[in-house]
Image 1 (cartoon, one colour):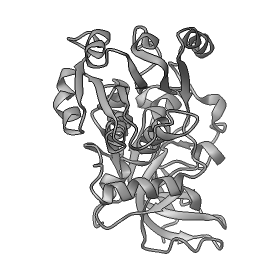
Image 2 (image 1 turned 180 degrees about the horizontal axis):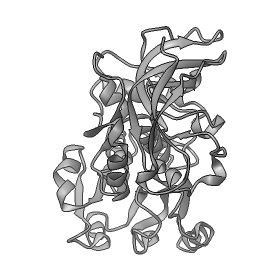
Image 3 (image 1 turned 60 degrees about the vertical axis):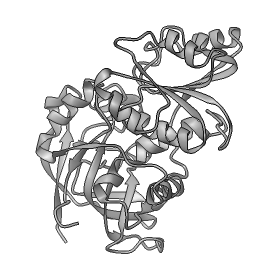
Length: 339
């Protein structure tokens, strides 16, 4: 096997121009880890915030080149002594160990990752489609269904508003909410209305030309049961007024733009509703991914549209990511030629 690998790494915080294509040693898996040859790496909003230095406190020091990337799809090439679940040649999807151990992320040809963050791919799911899933789909799933977040129960007759429905998290959230039997209103720009409609949304609001509060009050005169905000703290003018008494605003933690969370929570309480800031938990990531892959395999949900960049165009991918107007997901292609 190769001793070195291509990777997009950074040695300083900054704009998209700080990426350097480097040759780095291929990492070796520890006893409970799997070594994966990366086919596609997911590009997530947290990546540019990391690159810009907003998450310094949560990341290891950057003396060595830092390889970003939180999720990927690929092929298992080796596994540690305590791994019996995965074998060489298995097609898999995974999250990286970047936040938990500081190990290099997925913007590289090879990746070492804990076995509990890996899931087998069904034959129906391509490596490209799979790479759109881990962080975006798990974030959406937990925000809607986790008992300490949306606590949505399948079959419940509820009305949900998803703010920012055309991005990665939104694409999965609309479909998962519909799969659970909820009615779903969405906001997106006019350019993405058809895309969001194709995901199954019941009520489409173009935030550029329509007033969100007015349109929602027509759709849900009593207020909605749950708002999932996948944009940022300041994107909705007064979200608590959109909720029915006892309703919940689950706001995806953006890590840079979450407003004054404590003040918001206190204000929510005065309105008789609650605000929850949702962080992803990766404790059971492999198992949760397997559940989501089963929904894709059986046609209950589909993976979002994806735009693919080669590794040497990582700077352009990040520039696009930072506009905040990505439809579906952006991916980096690493070793996907013959798979």
